[in-house]
Amino acid sequence: MKLNKTIALALVILLAVTTLVGCGSKEVLAATVGDIDITVTQLENAYNSSSSYASSYGYDITTDDGIAQFRDYLLDSLISSSMKVYQAKLAGITLTDEEMAAAEETAQQNYDDTVQSFVDQATQAGATNVEAYAKTLLTKALVSNKTTVKKLQASMLDDAINETLVSKHKTALLADVALTDDELLAKYAEELAAQKTAFDATPSQYFTYETYSQYGYTAPPLYVPDGFFRVRQILVADEETALLVKEKIDAGEDFEALLTEYNTDPGMSSEDYAAGYLVGDGASYVDSFLTAALALTEDGQVSDPVESDYGWHIIKRVSTEASHEIAYEDVKTTFDAYEQAAYQSEYYSDLVASWVADETLVTRYADNYAMVGLS
Image (cartoon, rainbow, N blue to C red):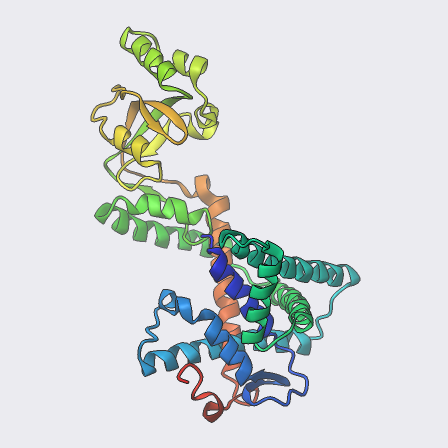
């Protein structure tokens, strides 16, 4: 999911002004993690930069309790981030010259993107002098976050360095953390049973899994429920061609031969979709295509031409899909990658949680930050 530019900018500023450097700060402290200081100013900046989308994290900041909960959530996030950096340095993780150069490049790109975001805002506002107005907007943001261009750039570099240190440390920690073949097979059986229950109750969840699994949010679909069918289509650029193709189909010409002659959809020539696109309620297709496809009630039926942003579609229902399990061997690569990543993520999260729970490493100064968000 893409963030809009305003939120993306807020996140950039948030990362920049909450850099976890912890070197003898004289500011009032919100917490310490080992030798890393988290100041009240950093927490305030984090709150101010992110309060506008607190509701997306499930927090209601219209009440004092909600404000306190969201503030504590942000502080916990800062503590967790600090702890990862602290533990990486404690483990003796360092950067090579190449990694340092890459961090510097990342920091510069982040700064350039931040500046460009203000240029975009100035352009959208219709400013006569875009460059001057963008500088004004940037200056206001820097002042409100109690920082300067130099401090912002330095913070972004520190962030990039710390992120690389944490990533290297995490990779080292997880080097030997993996599920066995037997454990993966057991995970498949467990996930298959869960999907059968879910998809039989709500078939559209199949397509939710199909979409989310592409981003690593869920396991791939392992079961196809009843009620789905497959379609093939002829996609053309204009209505005139679409009507001509449909006229030829109605006259008895072969659909696949016409597809070969007229179709512009590369999916139809892919082996992955040789049997056609799987269709059912909730499928991830443009509305006009899906509506026309779902209106085909019998195998062999062909739709009238329908328009979308992609062009004009003539859709044929080619087969009804019986409910069936998807064999482990057919999804092994994708499924194993998902389960291994999920297992390692949980392992690392538990490890970080155990570090944070160590009261000898983490100190919170609740009296110091009690009014953050309330004043």
